[in-house]
Amino acid sequence: MTGNAVYEFLDPWMIWAFRTSDNPYIGFAMGILWICLITTVVGELCIAGVYFLNKKHFAKINCEMVSHHNLSIKALGARNKTAWKACNSIANDAFGKNFFSHMALFTASLWVVPFALGWLSYRFGAVDFAVPYIGEIGPPFILIPSYILFRFLFSKAKPWLPVFKTIRRKIKENEGEEEMMTYMDLVEITQKKQESMPLPDHS
Image 1 (tube, rainbow, N blue to C red):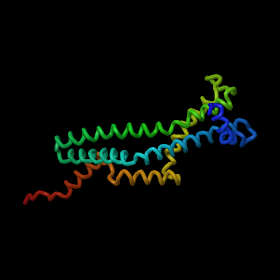
Image 2: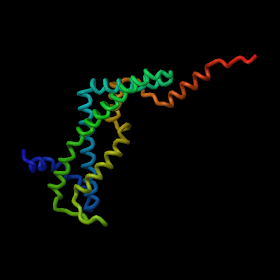
Image 3: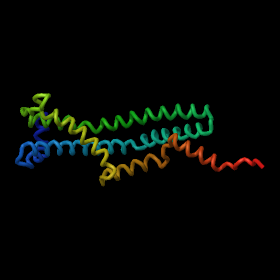
Image 4: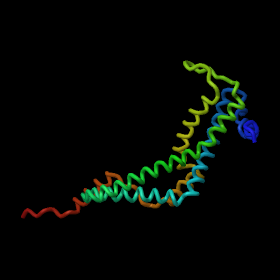
């Protein structure tokens, strides 16, 4: 299938949003919003799909990261420098693996964007917009920052969206119930130990 054939196939699914208003500016804004929604939702579902296909791998990395981080915190509280160094080294390695694994997940969600940009150029490539202090810009110049902003706002709303709320719960169940400790937790544990210690007898 050629590039134009792909865009022709996508056209009915995309163009309707641009025709929701007689005002061309409102219609274009609605169309951009629709493209941002479609690309974001498809991308997020791809992330979930890749995650659950490799859920044992992600669960192992996360459990190692949280477990050894917590052990390093506890070793620090016990003033065991040797154990702290060992656990902290393993935890840092697990942090790196976890970070790059999630970066790979994120990139799996971006494959939709080139198709959206391609279709937008196919449909509106000859249209230029005059922007103060910038000059003439094409539709892709509008889509990219709009997509970034929409993706950010979507990430904030995800915990309350029905399908993505379920995905979030399933991921949490897969990665175990142990939560990552902070150094404030160590301070609280130390304070509780001090409070539970009997006061010295000065009589």
